[in-house]
Length: 237
Image 1 (cartoon, rainbow, N blue to C red):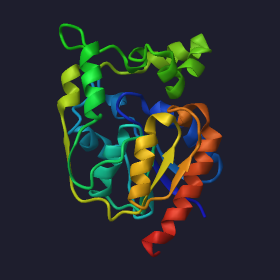
Image 2 (image 1 turned 135 degrees about the vertical axis):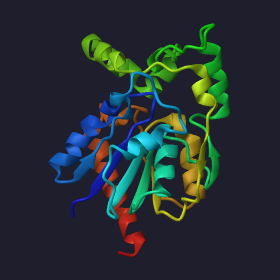
Image 3 (image 1 turned 90 degrees about the vertical axis):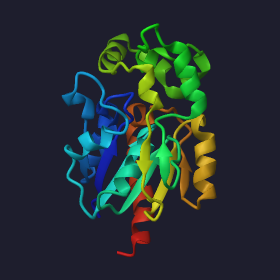
Image 4 (image 1 turned 180 degrees about the vertical axis):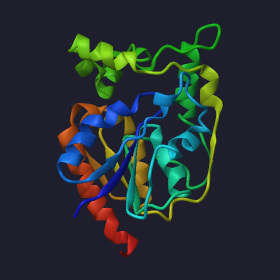
């Protein structure tokens, strides 16, 4: 059975971070959409406006499987309350509240981000936030950096944000009636996997890095396919 995926990247990285996994899914016969909101903007849209732009780039249907990586977990939860879909899958991201205000990052991370800002509020690109070698390893930046040419290309596509961008919220409508699953790819999101289990979601741990969709596309695609097929029968169709 072929599946219909909409792969949403977190705003801090480009949609190209999904492309290796998307290619694998397409090779397996699935329909895949990878919307790139940043492609049409010189500056990142606001957090609360992000999905308004994203909706112009996708063609959702009743068969759609919404997949959000990293901070896009909130974006797909918001979409699940606004467009037809069969289920959603979060990949190494926060588990959003069932409704109400949702920020792009956790409060502790927002405080850390503030410490990185220049006097005018400008932040370095996301890949330069991680001076700690252990955290860079958990993310997978050390693997990317092992190929200087590929890493330079990766960094050239990363957007620059103002620190105030992270103070915004999205007001989520009720969305947790939609079947959902969680794919953990790094130890960064141990707490998120625990919350997903608490909610009764299926959870799988790939024991990799945060950038698993880029660095390990075969394993990521296989996990997405298996998780989606596990969730789809729950829709009663």
